[in-house]
Length: 203
Image 1 (cartoon, rainbow, N blue to C red):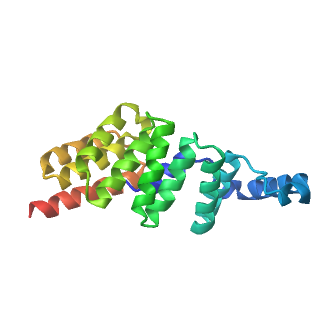
Image 2 (cartoon, rainbow, N blue to C red):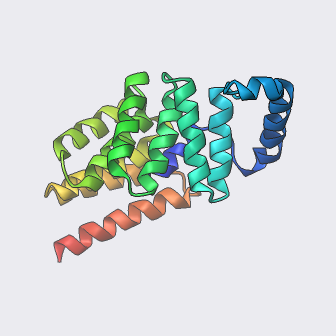
């Protein structure tokens, strides 16, 4: 599972909301007036920053998105979704240390957040270390994963594959596929990619 998959479900917003959100931003700035902005006060809420970040990211404006996600987390440090979105952005930019820090803050804000646990596990896996912690995180995420279960099972399968347990990994993929709707081509494609890695390792 890519880290950005969970962000799309975790943070409200997207291309369809861009016009409304930008209009809202302009309205808030207008209401604030020059004096308010001159004092350095932020007229946007944490949720508004997060939505604006998601809209920027959907347009491929990654630097602008990161700035908004950071602002969202700064406005509300207890917003797990804000830290999750920032972590996904950092992960996709290859900044694993920064992604890990953001995902850990998401878990601190919401210890049972399955998406944060899964994405932290993915970051540790990508970094090539602390695989025991990554496995614990993925297994711990499963009971609360809900619709994310196939993603978490895929993450766990990749961890088991990396730790030399291909048969267990294949069994998890079977379980993930059984729980994935036939129309969810993105998840099925990821499961097939993991199966290909298992097959390549067996040769």
